[in-house]
Length: 542
Image 1 (cartoon, rainbow, N blue to C red):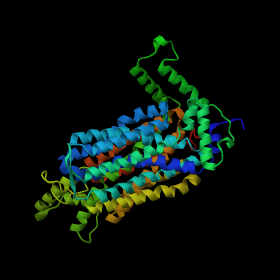
Image 2 (cartoon, rainbow, N blue to C red; image 1 turned 90 degrees about the vertical axis):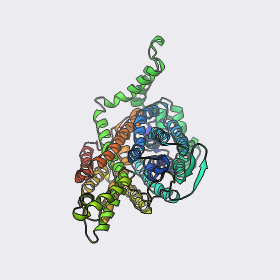
Image 3 (cartoon, rainbow, N blue to C red; image 1 turned 180 degrees about the vertical axis):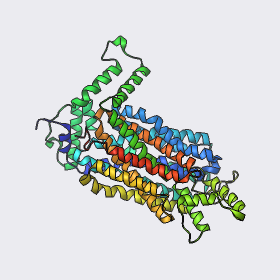
Image 4 (spheres, helix red, strand yellow; image 1 turned 45 degrees about the horizontal axis):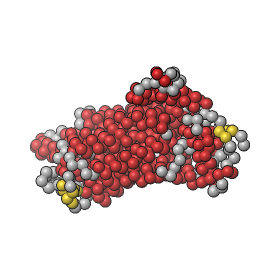
């Protein structure tokens, strides 16, 4: 067989053991990201007395990972498009594992915040780049299914975190360590949260570079060698039996890419005009980013940024506050046996008791808010924090509730695997966003904790699944040399949505509670309308 297009060549490698291994290792990067994003929610109450954290300190520690991700998104997207997918993923995962180990020995609050910022900075690369890396090993016919299966891995993280926390955080033991002093169980939990990053980084040492990336760089023979390896692992036959002997150059990508690289390095012009180091890098970053906002790609970029903002605002904003909401509803139901009310009814009921109970209510609510004001809230300590003796523990009910959420988040992508082919990625995305938007609005309308829990599971599980699903849509909206940057920027915008969602709950919940849930559902419904503007088939999906 003569020279063939890349999409035909990758289809001829078949599917099998290599793609299963690829899915497990690439998907694990998403589990690692989930561990870093939601890990502090379990960490904060257990570490509060050791680090003398106020509620404001807890809020900063809970948000600092997102801030680090925002700072890293553009940088790592640029490197992934210029230095290679696998190298960037592997280096940043190893770096995150080292940062997690150092975090376990953080002597004070400032050191832990700094290290968590670095963790977010490094972890933004694996999550974003892994989608581009995974997609470029699949043909268009199999790519959607692979991305939907990747949506299982955030759920694994949602199950892994409460399981590890339940095992470790309630432990009362303490050991003496240099620089740290008396170390409690939460420090071991920090190490365990970084372990998936280390194991996944080791896994990437056994995977090759993306052949589509290599082809886009003009490294045709290296790309062909990778495809031969994929064929050999999948089929069990010798590499020389792979029917493709040459690949057609990726003219739509390679020419623009090589020209941009040449201009950035100064080789396209006279050597005297070659820019200095920092200037060259900044110019190259600009040349890698600017095409996303040209007339050809501007609409796709806008849709990618705004829709991802709304999806991740729902996927990460609500789960952070759910434990506190569960606690408040349970407290109200405990004081009003047999009665029912909405979540906002329970919040407002606790805030506006009248008559003789007013004084007692104020002190009770003050105690509740001292442990639940921040997003870490709802993991209340059984004992008051005593700086002299750190004995803070975490309620078991918190772990049980979050395990339910993890199970729901695991089922959603599994079910969607059987829907994505007959419906298509775009239609499945539209239906999923409409469902989550409607359920988000209905959170304030249901009048029992069980119904609230069920709707919350739908919102969390389906929006988590939509992150992977929409990332696969974004990959098909842009050519190869812009994909990693596009996914990175969309996820950066999504992380802004996470921060906005957290602040929205904190600002509105006690003042105009119903608006909180109408805003959550409204943003997802707006994303539904915008998703209708997506092309039925990605412009660069073939």
